[in-house]
Structures are given as C-alpha cells and as structure tokens.
Length: 194
Image (cartoon, rainbow, N blue to C red; front, side):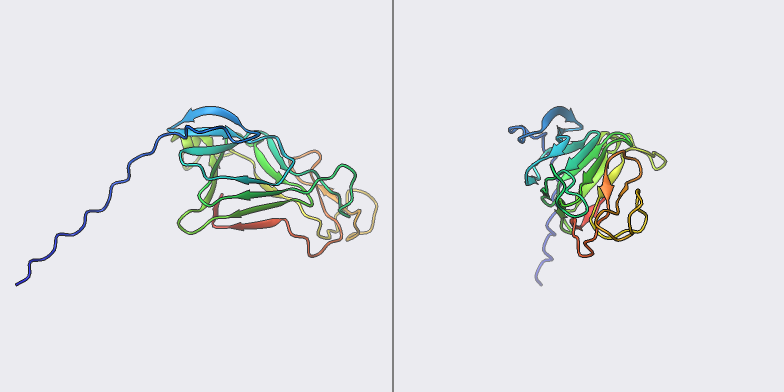
C-alpha cells in the first residue's frame, strides 16, 4: 500500500515591520503605531493622486481632508478644482476623532476599488492601537461624497433641481452638495470596509 502523504503545514504568517521607505509626497510621517508607519494625509488633494498600498504603512485622516475644491452646482464655480483620488487595493486608513473625515467635493471623485482578498479599510486609530472595543463610538467622521445631482431642499430661495439649488452637508460649515446633473458621478467604492 501507498503511505498517506504528510499534509503540507499551513504557513504561519510572519509579521512584517513598519514601512521604512520615503514619505509619500504631500504627507507627514507621524511615526510608528503597532508596527505600522503612519502617514498623515494632506488637508486637501489639489491634483489627481494615487494612494499606494505600501507594506507596513497606513494613512491617517486628521481633521477634514478634502478631495478637490468645490466646482459648484453647474461645474463652473471660480476656484473650483476637480481631482480624482485613487486608492490601491489593501490600503488602510485610520482616524482618531469624529472631526476626522474625508470629503469628496463636487466635481471630484474617489475611486477606491479593493478586492475580496485585499479590501480597502477605513477604521479608527484605536483599532490600529488594539484598544477599540465593541462599544467604542465616535472614533472618526466617515466619508462624505458630495455630488451635483438635483436636490429639492435648497439653502436659498431658488427652484429645486436647479444648478443653484445646493445645501451644506451636516457636520460641516462649507461643504456643499446639489446641482442639476442627474448623471453626476463621484467615483466608485468596491470591497471597502468602513
């Protein structure tokens, strides 16, 4: 008889160290937390940017982080700037307080497309530190995607659904949504854990 083959042992993952390469452009190195290098995002992305999934690195959202500058409900607001922020699969973001959030302004896009095996993760810094519990709340503010689709609740006396019909998103003082572009697109999120 043929002997039963010995099963191949399941490999034990070895923990990698914190990222030791160069700090990505426009970001601030905030040191190492739980064996991960923490890079703080800029307060505003002013050009198309790709956030890379660097082994041993995470990205911190500190305060409001804006993607682009509002282009207005008609897409022609003076000073507006449309920007696309692309996130590679497996990238991890952390934030520390309810006032830490990512804002995708009108005209800009967030393309965060992970995979089933490499989801993009947005979580709290306490989770990274290993101190979060099931009852921990208010650890970060979230992702706000503002578009130019028609709305009916205008903050001024203009017709609902018009390009000038806009409103301020809750929790902010100047982040606006609304317009007259029913097909407006603020990006794609797939395989994202929030």
